[in-house]
Image 1 (cartoon, rainbow, N blue to C red):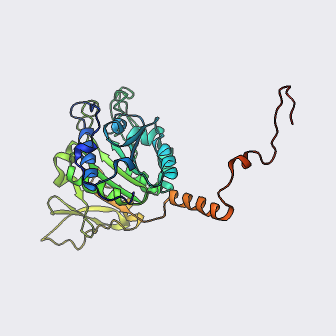
Image 2 (image 1 turned 30 degrees about the vertical axis):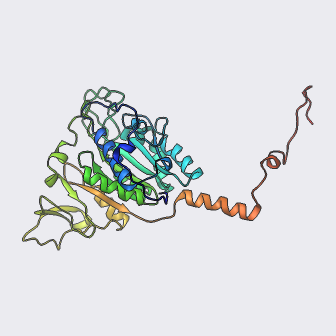
Image 3 (image 1 turned 90 degrees about the horizontal axis):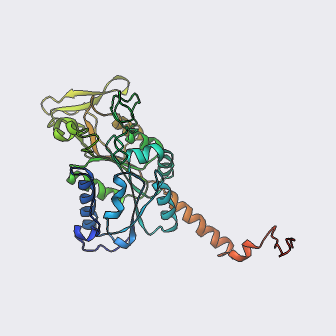
Length: 341
């Protein structure tokens, strides 16, 4: 995050002059509006902010932000963003990707950018389908998903994005829904202030090819969501149910009797990776899904370490001379007659 003086901005200041072109009812509209509103409230410097995307419906995002941006190639947004952040550490770099772009062809890039703890803010739009290419099943699609590529139903077991991010070493992991502007805004603000690899799973609806995939979770948040709060027990259903750990650290849904939450798991964003991994396994249909910041950890970033290496080398060896380097060692010139000198 750049240490910029807070500016007075409105959401309109973050809107570009491009017509927003997503399908009617697409969850991307709500995510875009919340990102614009939140960054305006934070008073960012637009000239110090960059949005980098890959390929997919979500990847049109940079066109609609009145900041700098790159619309790159399929799955490679983390790579482009990494190079940018290392060479320009003063910039705030956001990565916009989808479940297909970021977890299929770009899965390897995603794993290593998180492992290195690059100071990037990655938002992964998860609608459990390939929307741009007309509805093929994706790495996060549920077993049985019927799509043009799986007319009799997918037999793949879906990938858990949160579990992947935690396993790869992300230092800020969160989940939000496109319909919850308040919760999303809070997470974006926390992500902006975090120094390190941010991974936000954004549950997003595709009304054309996978409509209603998150319908139960969004329409019945009291019973289908656990709103995470630091130092508070994992409760849902208006506080009448909660999560405890049974034998073998197996999570169980239990009733909360007379307000007694002593047996329930208490949330800590800075808890152990083991606890965060347990949270990642609470998924539909067996459990309500945790929403909010699941995990955060402070650790030196790859880009900071790389920049320090360069600084140390210059201090030890001087600024260097490119021309001298080019003509050092085994160097020769080829004459017009083809002879070497």
